Length: 377
Image (cartoon, rainbow, N blue to C red):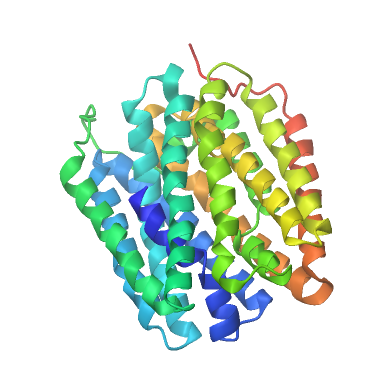
C-alpha cells in the first residue's frame, strides 16, 4: 500500500510531466511506459526462479522495494527525458525483482480454499495506495501551483517507510528444504508446470495486449478538458473502484468458475474501451475509467490465483516469473502500438483497438474449455 501510494503520486503526473514539461510525444510516452512495465514483468522470471532456488523470498522482496524507493528522487531532479527514463526503468526493475517472490510468499502463506480472497485482499491494499497517491498528488499540485518536482520529492517518503516495514515487520514462513537444490528453469521443471499453467500464461498475454498502459487514460482526460492539476483524479476514480471490487471478486473466485469470471472481466473491459473511444466530455471519460477499474478488480487477483492453482508449490516463484515475462513482452508491444495509433489516427483508435484485442482474448478463452483451471481439492 505504501509503495503504491508513492509510485502513483508520480505515475499519475508523469505522462503530463513528460508531455508538457519535456516535450515528449504520445508515441514516445507509450514506448517509455511499455518499456518500463515490460522491464518489471520480464525481471520477475529471474527473481521468481531465484527465490525457488534459494528457498527464501523475503530478501529479494526487500531489495526490490529498496530499488523502487531509491528511484523516486531521480524524478524530482531530472532535467531531461533521459533521466526520467532511467528513473522509470530503475523503479520498474525494483518492481520486477520484488513481484514474483512477494506473490509466491502470499501463495505460500495461504490455504488453497482462501487463495482467491488472499490475492483479492492484496490487490485491494495495493490499490488503496494507488488511489490515495493521485489524490495526494492533486492536493499538492493545487497547493504548490503545479510544481511537479516538489510532488515527486514528497513521494519518496512513503516508499522509504514501505522498505522499513517489510524489512523489520514481516517474518517469512519456513519452507521445506530440498536435499539438493535444483535449477527451477531446467527443462524437467518447466515440463512440470503443465499444460493448464501454460494456457493461463497465454491467456494472460493476450489479455495484456488488450490492456495497454494506463498512461493513455491520463492523456485522454487532459485532452477532453480536465485541468492538469485535477488529471490525477482520473486515477483516483479508477483505483477506488479497483480497490473496492478486488476483494469481493477475489472471494467470489473461490466459489465460482475462474473461466467465467475472467470472461466477465474481459466483457467489462470491452465496454470500458468503447466508452472511452466515444468519450467527448470528461464525464464520459470518468465513466469509462470507472469500468476500467472494475475490470481490474475482477481480473488481476484472479490471474494471480490461477497461476498459483496450476503450478507446483516449489515452482511458484518461477511460475509467476514466466507469466510476467510473457506479459511484459506483450505490454511493450501493446503500449507502442497504442501510442502509434494515438499519434497517427487519434485517441479513439487506441481504445477501439483495445476492444478488438479483448475479443481475441475471449476467443482464446473459449478455445480451451477442457483444461482444468480450478484449485485441486
